[in-house]
Amino acid sequence: MSTPMATVEMSFTPLPAHVRTTRLVATAVARRSGVAETLLDEVRLAVGEACSRAVEAHRERCPDQPVRVALTGSDGRFEVVVTDAASTLRDTGGQPPGPSGAGAQPDPGASEGPLPGFLPSELGLAVIAGLVDDVRIARTESGLSIRMSWPSGDAAG
Amino acid sequence: MDLKLDHYTKDGIEVVDVEGEIDVYTAPRLRELLIELVKVGHYQLVVNMEKVEFLDSTGLGVLVGGLKRVRAHDGSLDLVCTQERILKIFRITGLTKVFGIHDTVDAAITARKAQK
Image (tube, rainbow over all chains, first blue to last red; front, side, top):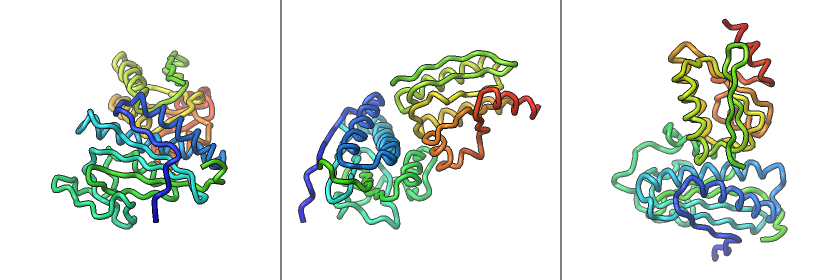
């Protein structure tokens, strides 16, 4: 089964100023995809949190690499995937890894802290976990992938 | 919208008006202001968030940092906020138990004075 083409894909240099732009684009695409108005604040905050932590991680470890965001509206869901290339966190224990995390090898230098424990610097992940019903966090070969989705009306796709 | 910051003294308490978005880009400006206020001796702070349109965990971190700084001087940092979308992030993170959150600046000042 092929992965549906993203409605919008973005990559941006890891600067805090671009996080706001990403929030605005994600909210606009969510609205166009038919996400209920009452959920748009949730989308905006969750995308902002995911991008903020990715930017922070890139600035520490790989400031010349872009943060990637894919927004997809299909099959009654609006999905956002924020992928960084800088993380050292491991998979969440109970969450199934996303497709990009399949077969990923743990980084030998990775932090031992499991995500459900949320280190203070990972408050953003704690907010996402508390905010979004459907969230999957997985390692990719190079970093962390945060996949979140909300129900949508598939108005546009 | 960018972040606008202002502050004034009322009944001996420094009130910080915050307007706009507090995120990873703008939060450093709020942090600098809170640090500066503490540095010049304002240890009783009320942060008015009624015109805040967006707050993320970076902003929460700045507020917690401000609280830590004033508490080091036996001070206080209370919040004014009635917006559900902003209050939600305080609830998710359990910070409603850490901050005094009030409906108006006057209510925050009155509550603070009553605790003295």
